[in-house]
Length: 433
Ligand code: S3P
Image (tube, rainbow, N blue to C red; front, side, top):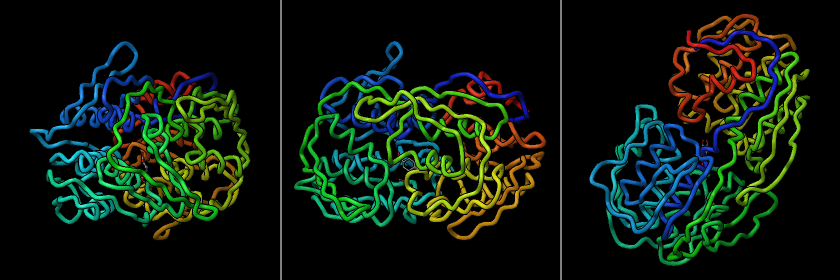
């Protein structure tokens, strides 16, 4: 695909449903006794793999009208392995849920997912009594049906919502009260959704930054009706495009603005971006808003490591924005970026450097230096099958000196189906190369 400079971006669009909430809506619906409904679900490859896994585990899931209908109930061991494609969230959360349900299942994924660490989920689940085999703590993984799990108290080694969620899902089927200590808060959709599905959980603060979460096992979930808000991690692409494109003024409707997800927007504001959360409201226990973004003159900033959990997926697109800003933007605390769909520190650095940007990196940091004018552009970027890298560099091409091409846009559908169409409707020039 190729992105070229076009006129100012204008108008309104919607971001696809939040990926984190969409996975969870299907998993919680499949665990609940009865029929749940879900509107606004992200119908991207990652989430559709989770839907297929839920069906294999015994749930009935159908598209009905504009939404989805999920009939949950007791789970059974599937006949075939569960295949999660590119989706770390799907694989890791379902491991926790399968462990809690006490059924057997085999897990697998594509080449990129097979390279990503699964020990971070398997270790706490094994502490709870799970029997599982994995080669080198990676997929393929087999979970055995066994004794009921026992509750544990554990501390998250890193602020990972996937790990936290896997433990809480397993805890639903464990004997006793599981206590998870998160020294630094990370996205809390699992906790919010547990409450929406009628589970009781309690929280105790741990100083300024962290908390303890307690969940008693044996609780059954009641069905719920959910409306999935737009994904702030996907909305980040049109917002970034507007901020770097002269004359742009756009609104992205109905975006999730959960405080644990908006680090990217806070950072853009720190850089001088003209961004407003309009029409703020609540939907299904989550805060949402319409986000207005206009072209802005930007300056570089230091992005503190403490902000990483609230913008973990947004560093590639922030780095592109930083290339248009005046001065140095330093991002630290990025070690987790190296084990995402690609090594995002490396893929981001390589793509920026190829397009004439002054960029440096270390084990857990990236530094981008701009002079306030658009970078040269003109290169073909290897996206390493990573959807967020692909979208980041297409956005760059909309305002760089010369068009930017990516070698593969197929993975964009994992999180943002219709990305090209959505951007084109705002006036962007993105096409097949
Ligand atoms: C997610 C958590 C994050 C994020 C991913 C979605 C989730 O991963 O990168 O895209 O839905 O729980 P980690 O938990 O590994 O940080």
